[in-house]
Amino acid sequence: MEQSTGKVYLLLGSNLGDRSRVLQLAIDRIGERVGKVVRVSGIYETAPWGVVDQPSFLNQVIAVETLYAPEEVLRLVLDIEHELGRVRYERWGARVIDIDILFYNDLILDSARLTVPHPRLHERRFTLIPLAEIAPDFVHPVFNQSLTELLAACADDSEVNPF
Image (cartoon, rainbow, N blue to C red):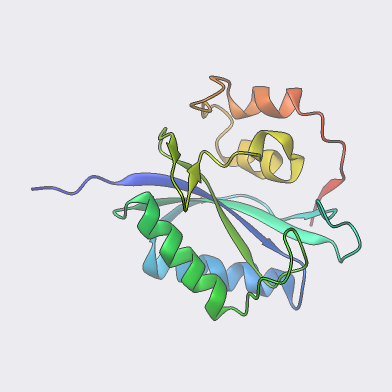
C-alpha cells in the first residue's frame, strides 16, 4: 500500500539570538525529519504581535511534502523547537524559534492539540505575505479565498519588510 503525501505549510519565526541562522537550522531539521522542503519564502523582518515590547521577528514560510499525519508533524516541529532552545514563558513572547502549522493540504482539523488551518493566519500580514509569496493561489479551505485575496483584505497594518 502506497503512503499518501501531505503538503504542509509552516511559519517559522525567531526574535532572539542569531535569527537568520536559527531559521536555517529549523529548515534543515524539518527537511531531515518532517519531509522534503519544496518551497521557501524570502525572510521578512516584522514587528512583534501581541506582546509588542520585544525585539523584531524574522519570519519565513516553507512548504513541506510529508508522509506524516498532522498530529505527528506537530510533535516533530515541537521537538525541533525544543532542540533549538525554545522555552515557553508567555504567549506571543520573545522566542528563539516558533514553528506554526498553517495548512495541511486543504484539511480542516480542530482537535485538542491542533487547529488547521491556523486560526489567526488571515489576520496577520507577517504570515500572509510570505505565504502568498510561495502559494498565491492556494485557497483557504474555510474562507474559500486565495492567499492573495486574504492578504488584500487583511486589516493588519503592522510593518513587514524584506530582510
